[in-house]
Image 1 (tube, rainbow, N blue to C red):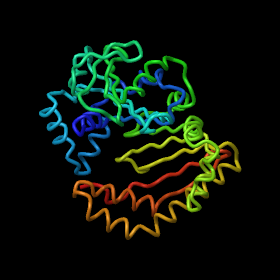
Image 2: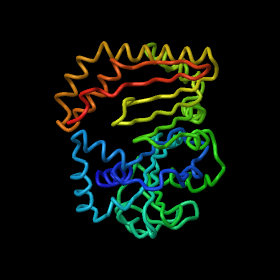
Image 3: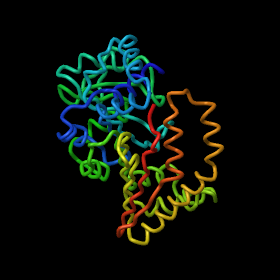
Image 4: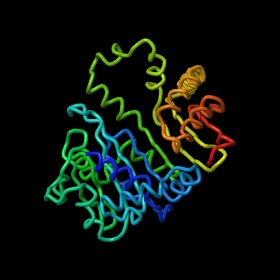
Length: 314
């Protein structure tokens, strides 16, 4: 299982990106029930991680050696996340990677298994392990695009076609020319939570989280971008249902930053003892969020920015 997850993350994060101006294939295959998509421009990400001292190249070389898979041949990676209220594990992932022609030949290596499988009418392969307690399966969307992950999530992506939905719309509008882009659509997220918890949903929110829950109910969508080498390290654009809702979202975000500021000494101390030296930039990111977060409201939209630390790097 650990090798499967590593292969998925490596394919998603470390593969170089080509043709970023093209519309991603996965934009036309996002089910209406999916609330989250995370995609990477891995040329930028890999370059910037190396500049920060993260041993990316060693990780890629190790993956090539262990999996006998040329990860550098992949050109883009996207994580699509579903929420299946009927599944034992509610959150189920599907991964989309784009690479060279004939990517189907790499599927057995990607999923670590070569047993034949049929998912939503498409032929593919089944892995030896499981992901989120479901069979790991893989298939293709076209000659250059592989799809793999938890079986029910993969099936949903295959069946989605071009039906679209809130997440597909938001993902299609997003500027993907960043190291990392995460897009959240609240309507399918709330629908999944409602299906899971029913009328008890509001009652089960603990008092400490009531403000965050109130803001979440006002939120329609959010897009978060990461640019490790630019002046603005993190940017979040939160679209609320109204100007009043935007104020609620802003106040909640400011409250979260205030709490982080209070807990910063303890957080830094704890992470400092738990994280390896190459993960030190993560501590600086958290510190930057606590000290440099700024907020702007424009109608029903809240924009949050976090400045890149001046000493960010090796």
